[in-house]
Length: 398
Image (cartoon, rainbow, N blue to C red; front, side, top):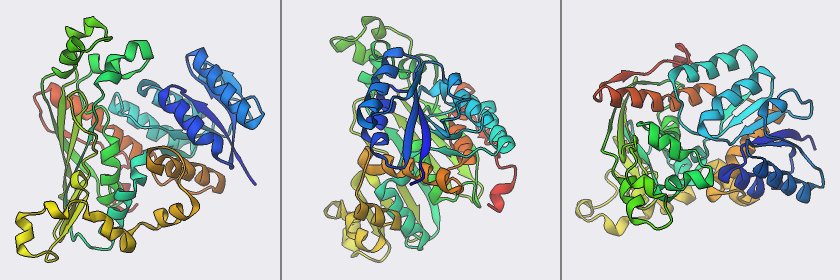
């Protein structure tokens, strides 16, 4: 069997869990190198690879040492947000295929640099947005493609996840979120919700996002949490957090559709990505995992929908996405309900077979650009900000 020689870069909580829970079980890759800026993380992951494979990978704290190695075909970038683009650029310049984990960009220029470098080098690049492979998201996309929801007018979603403990313990756990929440006010993690929405709305493939407006609430959640939680650095109770507790972003698309994104990570709440699709014939809403199709339910049920909550599973037999039908038969692997196995598996498959990446550099640039554009909008009083067209007109024919 042909195998892809892979370097795993970034071995903190996300990187090491992907390595242990997924990569070491994949039979079509060799993990030939591991890298993290912290030596103890590198040593831990190298030992894990050696234990499972019997082969000791090259280990380093400097990703540049990986880029010229002949035993590395591709890099998986799972490091802190700030380092994603510099590592990706170095890899593409050295013709190492790039699988890059998600996070918002720090500038629009950064997004352009990814696009230009990929264009100039022709190096394969995939944005590893696992939520695009969510089972519910893919079923709904399949239903949209078959016309069940009619013409789509609006979609919404959010990264709604209580991260107060993770943010507050960023210093001791060497986690990047703390420094970001102290210094930035933006939609800092837009792609979990935007990725599936972009696929539903054909963004970069017949449609594109043209403008956005963002608004941030006060930043009170982290101070309150730090003040009343034992074991948290007490200085955070009075620290000046820049990141608003809730950021709402409205996006207008070339096709006339609208999108609402919500970042909600520093107040008490349950987890949700809030994936919602509204069309002329019906809707899906993740919050209660239900599907409402026009003229399907008696009028009385419009007023008492609660008994139908969770009914989306009733549509699986008929509308399960083919990718998931096959996946369930072969066996789910990886974290996040199997989404990780699908997205990483697709990257490796495309590299080995020379196929186009399903989530490419134009998708990465457009989705990541929400972060700096939202920061600009918030800073200037929630003014409308135009989206760059990273495809330079090709979205009309892609």
